[in-house]
Image 1 (cartoon, rainbow over the protein chains, first blue to last red):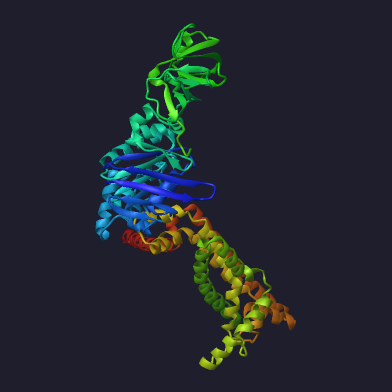
Image 2 (cartoon, rainbow over the protein chains, first blue to last red; image 1 turned 120 degrees about the vertical axis):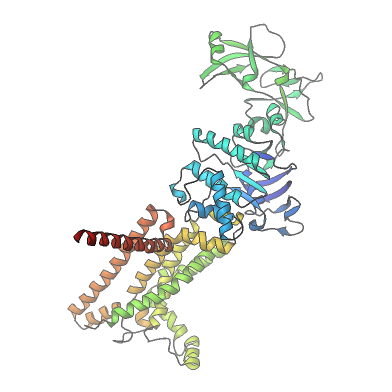
Length: 353
Length: 256
């Protein structure tokens, strides 16, 4: 299974220019980005429910769309499964009828396929129910059964957990993870939730404002996002504008400091990012990679302390630490935050610029 | 008492509702998907009969179907069929007058339809025709039925255009509404009141039926709406009969 996507669409106030490849078999690629960044629109282009102005989409050697050659296969011929955000189960059909819709073969065969997927998705016993009588989690399983029963070569998952409560999400997420692992085709997973993406996806493609960054392996992406939008969406709370000094350090005017980094500095580096929980607190007078500041606010978070520190450069830095650790410091007025050069991330502008 | 006006009104309303039902669904679906400019223009034309006085509509129909006008003349010469001043002439009038009610209600239902359901059907490999008949129509059925009921009620009570196109001939073109007017005109108060009560009764029954249907559609699974409800009732009927038979046999055994 391979997928190559290059789509452009001008909607007036919004422009979509997305281009990426999914070269490996049975890989799950995340399209990660804030709401309204064009993720769902991209899925629509691939499924054939949205027509791009220009571009080319190739799935396993089959051209699904090519504006130059005038090719645009209808959604029915694309063999692409789509899990909609609210699942889009047909309200006028029972669970069994829903799952049978996409199955292939004669009636008996379709029913056999449907029943086997209903079993695999653990919704056995609900065959005769109508979608309105199902819980959110059951609806998702039925929608997954319906999608997989149509034997797609590629599946598109649009925010599969956005309609569900937290505790239910977790159980379903583990189920979906198993299903995706046993699925022999590729998957595109649209989400704005970085934790879900980290657990479920092999690689990550950041989409902001209708444009995307090249996909990166998930671990690598979260260890070291390369651009400002990528750092932001990966959960990096501290980002300062930065210039590279002659001796290869990062001058960060927002924080009023110059920082050493052991990460490679790419051409076009214009910012620096530091994750909130990678700081440690040192005694006053500590030399090296430090950011000093006044403790402005301490927020008691669920399982950690969030400390907002006003730096000499004027911007605030967010420091997150263990509750016990902060209590041991005895409520200081000022702190010196030490940062290992391994965790100072040089960032390029990314996005459309 | 001569019940002809009741029978005539009912058949006129039934035939015109059948026509308006199909025409309304077709055009509503077309307009709901049309580009903005065409949509606006079509919408004005198709809704116009709702705001025009019925006499104006009657006049326009006579302009087309009258024996001295193109379509009417052609029908008269080719098939020897008169299109005006017969019982079925009223059907043309009621079609035009009741069409906007069906069209607008159906269009509202189609516009409220979740396009993602259609897209789900498409990505599952089903044709657009299948999606329309098996998903879109059943989902929009409550709105469509409401439109048909309103169109039927409107057709049943149509007076202005009908009286111009079909006139009033007792036992031939007389409808409930034209009969009420005629009886009132000749001071037959009691006769007029009878027909008024008949009309009120029919309209009330129709509207109560519509409300019951809507409530059912809102409450229950949509699977039980329309043909589904009919099928269920049929299955239950068989079950009820079996149950009655069993109960009957049990009673019989007990009495012996």
